Length: 191
Image (cartoon, rainbow, N blue to C red; front, side):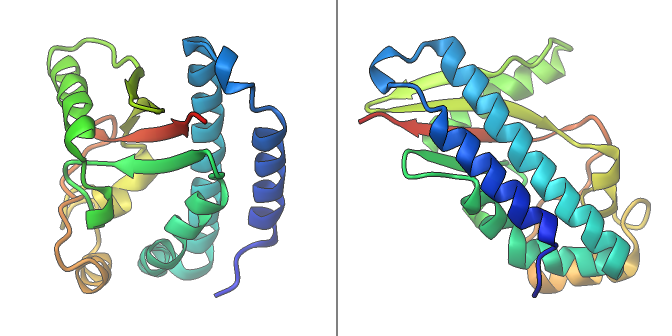
């Protein structure tokens, strides 16, 4: 399947920017991790959103489900590097690879509790051995309701059918715009 030309250009631009501006890990501060994490998340989200918007325009929402199934991980992986991994984590995941691990589960509960209490959701940095994990909450955007909203209300029957065929154990529906959908996890491996 062909990817739009702008995805390749944006990927090269982001990778160049990320790799050329990585500070020496011996002098990285919490603010550096936060800034770099936010930059990576923005680039990844923008690339995924633009690719999905194009797929929806060209193939409809049902076709965009198949596009996402084939391309979301390669797009995300293209924006990662040898020392930086990018993951989308959710308790109600579509793909089992997005299930939280034990460290993720702790941060997930913090975000869920804050959201339930009406508190603001603050990104977090967790250090685990030689890796620094930057977590940022992911709130459902209105356009995402077409695939992650309520079945029969936001999600059309043909889209439900496409989701069920590609993700037989899907848990990622029933959301409303603004709900805590998941969280970004940017992991920085220190050398």
